[in-house]
Image (spheres, rainbow, N blue to C red):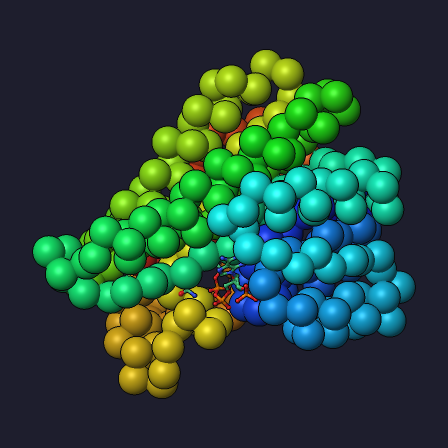
Length: 250
Ligand SMILES: NC(=O)c1ccc[n+]([C@@H]2O[C@H](COP(=O)([O-])OP(=O)(O)OC[C@H]3O[C@@H](n4cnc5c(N)ncnc54)[C@H](OP(=O)(O)O)[C@@H]3O)[C@@H](O)[C@H]2O)c1
């Protein structure tokens, strides 16, 4: 069964990692996907891969900090694929890792802009079309960082990822009655470019009950659930896909 057959989805941060895995999975499940990131080559390559597999995809190159990137993604979804049903606002960056008092205001602002304000800008662009259609599902990629744990040097990132929980609750309150759902996906450590080198990955693995970090496909599966009608009564919520990181201290 294709879980999102005939739907149109925007996925930000699709040039690598979790967003790339989600792009392949959403397309395999029948959605036309609009792929957003700054790096053109990996996006173009991903579009080709999806098309070779019989799916539909297009790339929008841009910075999620800029409102026009979200408008361009929306326009592409509408003009090429005829609407917008799903948004996976997933782009993120860790930014400068240092103790709070050493973080420059400009570094703080950048981390908040990419991880939190860009999510607002995305939702702000996406919601009117979903309202017209009377339905929509928005998923934001949060993190265990900021929601179940603080990690040294990551207070800006933690603040942004915790802030996403306020955003999903606010959208759920504003639009729940008119058919738009908003949820956060909270991954544990995941084997992407963001996960760092082998030593960092091994350290991160130890934080999880399962004593490993996730494959990006495992996080994409959780995103697909939240984006699909399988989660039709789930809004304003958070789905931990974290290998027991939040639940267990071992
Ligand atoms: N990996 C983990 O351990 C982990 C754990 C919990 C949560 N997360 C979250 O998962 C999400 C995906 O990260 P990932 O693990 O898949 O890491 P990743 O492979 O580094 O992917 C990050 C994605 O975000 C995009 N991006 C970053 N800044 C952007 C900007 N200003 N404008 C547009 N796109 C931007 C990158 O594309 P370009 O560079 O091409 O722009 C890339 O596609 C992030 O929100 C991250 O915080 C990751």
